[in-house]
Length: 258
Length: 328
Image 1 (spheres, chains in turn purple, green):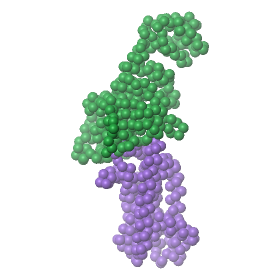
Image 2: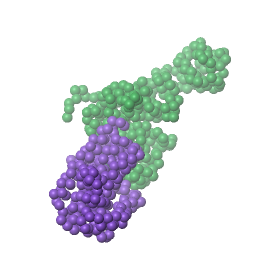
Image 3: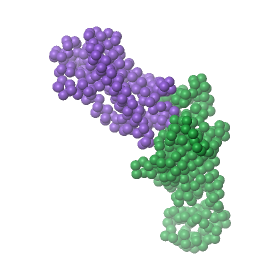
Image 4: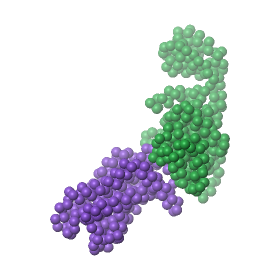
C-alpha cells in the first residue's frame, strides 16, 4: 500500500514537473476556465429573468457549473498523456518495471486532480470578482471542488482507458469530443433543470456531470440540501472508483496487443 | 512462494515460445538458453521475432504457448518478481524527453524502491560512467541519439539487475556513438557479471559483443553457437564472383560442378557464392570454368568465413538483402 502511494506520488510529480516546464501550456490551463466563465456569463446573463433560477444572478448560478465543466473538459484529454507515453516508449518501460498498474493510473488521476483544484479555485475567485455570491461559505466551496475532482477522476479514467484500448490520438480525440459536450448540455450546468425538456431532465438524472453540478450548487446556496449533496457525492465516488478500476484493467488489453 | 521442482539452470531460458498477432506468426517455437555472466546475441533481420522474444521475456506481453524463466523465476506466473530482477533497454528509447537525464534515472530508481541517498549516488555514478555528467540536468529532448541511447542503458542498470535485455541498442547510431556503446556493453559482463541478451541485426555487433549467438529466422532459432564455432562450421573460404551479365539458367552451376574442392555453390542474380577449402587455390579454376562456359566475370573476392556466410548458409538468404527487403 505504501509502495503504491509512493509510486503514484512519483508519477504525479513527473506530470506536474513536465507541465510547469511549458509556460504556454500553463497559461492556457489557467486562462481557459476564465474564458468559459466570462463568455457564458455574458451570453446568458439575462436568462435568470426566466423562472427556475431562484432569483440569484446568473454568474452565481453559473460558477459551480463552469467549475465542473472545466474539470470535465480537461480530464477528457487525460488519455493523451498515456498515448504520448506509448509513442515515446515510456509506457513500455514503466510496464516492465516493478510499478503497479494501479499506481500508473492513480499517478495520472492525481495529476488531473491537482490541475482541477487549481482551475476550480481560479474560477471561483474570478466568479466572485464578477459578482457571484457563495452563501454556502467555505464548506460549500470545498464541496464544489470535491465534486469537480470526482468528475475529473471518473472522466480521466475513462479517457485513459480509451487511450489504452484505442492507442491513437485521433480516436481518443474523436470519442472525447463526442462524449464531453453532450454531457455538459444534458445537465443543469448552464440552464435550470425546470427549463429543459422532460427527456433532458430524465437523462440528466443519470449524468455524473449533473450530479456534480447539482451537489455543488446546493452546497454553495444559503440553505444546502445535505441529503442531496451527500447522495450525489456518494454516486460520484462510486462512479470514479468503478471507472478507475475498469481503466486499470485496460492495461491487460494493451499488453496483450503489444 | 511456489517451490520449483527443477531449479532453472540458466538465467534466461525460453522453451518453445509461440506468439501470433492476428494472422502473423511472430514466434514459431522459439527456444534459447543463456548461461550466467555471458552476452548472448539474437541475430536476425527485422521481423524475425527478436523483439517479440524480448517483450515476452521482460513480461511486457505473454506468449500464446511455451514457457520462459528469467533470473530463476517463471515469467508467466510471477512477472512482478521478474521485473525486479531485470533491466530492459527496449528498441524504442524509453526515456521521458520532457524530464532531465537525472530525473529519468531518479524516477526509475524510485520505482525500484531504492532509498534516496543510495539512489542519488547511483545516478551520479551512472551519469559519470556513461559520460552524461554535463548533460545530467538538461531535458532529454535536447540529447543526441547517442546520448539518449546511453541514458537508456543507464536506466536499465539503475537497480543493479542480474539480467539485462538490450534490444537493438545501437540501431540508428552513428559509427562513433556505436563504438562507444559497444565499449560500455563489453564492460558490463566483464565487470559486473551481468547476463545479457542482446538482439541485433548488425553482424559486426553480434560478432564483437556476444560470446554465444543464435541466428533467428521466421520466429525460431535456426542455429546456435559461439561466433567462432559458427564460422568454423562452414569450413573453408567464401568465394564471391560478380558476373558481368545475368547468366542463363543453370549455366553457372553446370560450369562449376567440374571444379574440384568447391562446395555450396549459390547463384543470386549476378552474384555467385561458393566455398572452398582454400579460396586462393580454387579461384583460378573457378574463373577458368566460368570463362569456358561463356560467362564473363566482372570481379572476384576471396574471404575468410563471416557471420554473413553463416546466415546465408542457415537461412538460404543473404543477410543484408533480406534486411533491406524487410526494412524497405
